[in-house]
Length: 211
Image (cartoon, rainbow, N blue to C red):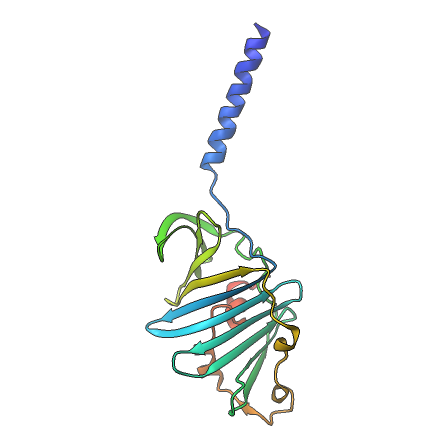
């Protein structure tokens, strides 16, 4: 009799555990410590291709932004809060900013609100919302990011996602005219910030002021 009671008690505990695991919402997969991604950006018909290099161990993040039939803008961010925005063409434009926060942490989506599953770009995704600012879509099967939607309507379509890819160290160096005391051309901040990608320092500061 005692063995039967023990058996049914174990079954009851297993049943509770199974029900709890089924009802528990999924959580976003933390970003890899290093990766390379190509993003197609669309904001009210304005298109950009972004080469995104994320390198958490070395405290740096790099967005190389190709405007459609336009120039290439380099957005280089460091974990000490310093960001450089520059071109490498003959205009030699450069601007910098100093923020209180560094680059996004791998677990920056912690605490995001789960919204369920939706289809986007041909993938079935789990969807989370972070502080009414970003909606993050992750492929249910592979756990790779697929799509980011920002409150402004800006959309990021993740075209490639290479875990462990690292950009050569020499490519992370801002040009000398960013440090020559203003000999280069200063970029108009208003125009510049309209064209910055999703991970630029201004957005980091407003979206994640506590990290």
